Image 1 (tube, helix red, strand yellow):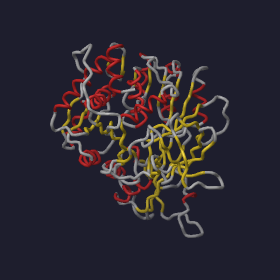
Image 2: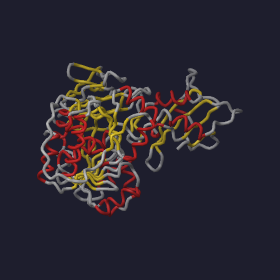
Image 3: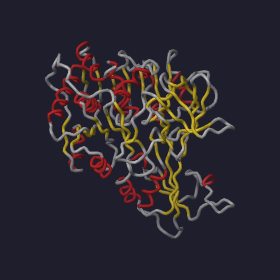
Image 4: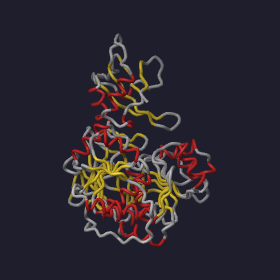
Length: 489
């Protein structure tokens, strides 16, 4: 599958079929191709465009046009998250070499604020029914995009993906994940994140329809589902739960495939999803920005009890373990496949563990005969909060810079199924608590909103182990009475 030629073919064979449906507009394949083609020609003829161009769009239609314009032009799209603070946005654009940015109307002011030139992305109002395929010199090993994943410091970890790696992953996974030209795929969360971005590219590559509000808002999702019956859902479990809680179930009755990833899907939520229809499939996959898809498992209504992710490797994925424990068979997971990213861009931070053509990022796993695998977590203290990778050390550094003492970050699951991020800090009893608005403003300058703790708990002293070390297992739970605390979000 060649992504560029596939888009061109869809424009010729199903020009009026909706490619992307957002809260504000619908774009069909002929218009998507014509709009991307015109923008690609501009990119190819602009001497100031280098090998990369930033893509900063919260609107799904603009993101689809911008991404495919980069694809047709043979330049690499640097995916920028609209939730980033201005300083991180500015530093990332400077560090990774993108003087110009493709953006929607909402993003133009943000680009002006950080001193970068915005190139507006708009649908082509005069649709061309048969625009020729734009010639590009880019082969399958050329860089397609730069995706930023969480890191243990404030420096971006920039993952380099090639055209071939994405084409191969779609070829090998579409049938397993229930994606086809007949799919109407609802993605209720942001498309700048890995799961949503992959779903957009996959949907367009296969000639299906993507239905997306651009970010989670129940009042935006409801009218989309009232006008379009979706048969497929791709979302992290936190958003699946919100859909089940806040969207009338009759609007979800057309779903036949639910695909989740990014964090563990609880047994309770899996059973709720499978209960929507007698012929529902619920597929949970495990992967990463660095490796794309690794393994998948089908959830079953007959399951009982929670269990670690245990699934089947996607076709073409080879796995082996480093530092394997002879007692329990666990070790650091190494992956070799055609889906793998090239690695981290050397201009940023991060270094992959390598073994010939296999790479690892610290996942701990156990291999099971029959191309099966059990995933037991990740080294490096990473947490996954509502679908986002979060490193406590990065948050602690930001809290210390804001003047808080000895911050310690933990996650707590609450009754609604949401995960709350709590930071414990040392704070003398006699001192007043900091102003929450001032503190929140300082944190928003260095952290995206999803990394800012929901609550701060102030302790006059730490609970201690007999050894004198902090007893982090016995910190008071946030709902405990008598605590001094601040709610930040």
